[in-house]
Length: 348
Figure 1 (tube, rainbow, N blue to C red):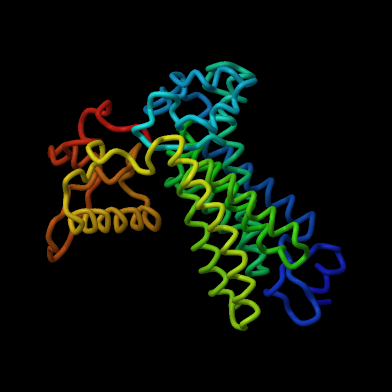
Figure 2: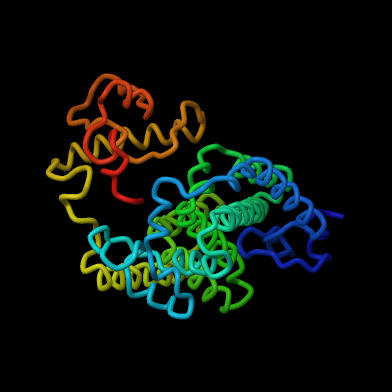
């Protein structure tokens, strides 16, 4: 019996557009294999990040203790009318109420004891890895590849900051809601309610961190690579789905603008204040090259990364040198926001 028939006989729903003839697409492996994979993933995450449970509040985590909104769970709805860091931080133009709700739940259970906050981050990372496992399997039907991908994602050191820092929960929640939205997207063919669930989960991701906006492009690229956008009807369906995602994103941008009085950070508080566009572009390009290197070759890691770790570049050079925070700190090249004195950097 073929794999597709085994899955169909097991009663597991399949995603539209990736199916073989006479079968619909799987969004998950058979129950036993899926549960086993998730247990293995959870074990790897626990081994890799158990030491984070002994951590306190580090770096930007101290802003969690400053935000009085988190101490009043009954009135946590106020988080939707305040900046991420609370009243008085409008100039930072961050807006992540979903994260504040999760932090308020932590505070309601155990106050400001760091253990609970770190434990939730660990669980969220394990959950995200299991969601990624399901997504890879949905596209490849190869359980071993899906498990390998999820384990690589689970153990890759590039995630240390997001999992170990309490404020890294913004990344974890944005990724989790994004993966949930993607799962729902793959099941839209089973009913209209899946489309609404996909959009709702995407909203959760956007209200956790604005970087969730990239999900639109990621899903679009995955659809093209999977060959699911070949007919006019498929393009029309994709356009409808994308419209919903864009409406959600636009609503977030509007509300963020209303709450903070602006969309972006004040210019005089940015790393590139007063710099021409080509300096911004070249410096950011240098940063993206370094981030890609860290993804494929995670060596010489830093506890915290942002573009201020890279000297500004105004002209093209024959070869850009690789820059790591320890090297820049020792050479004195870091200046301005993020350089040397940690207190001069804006919270992330």
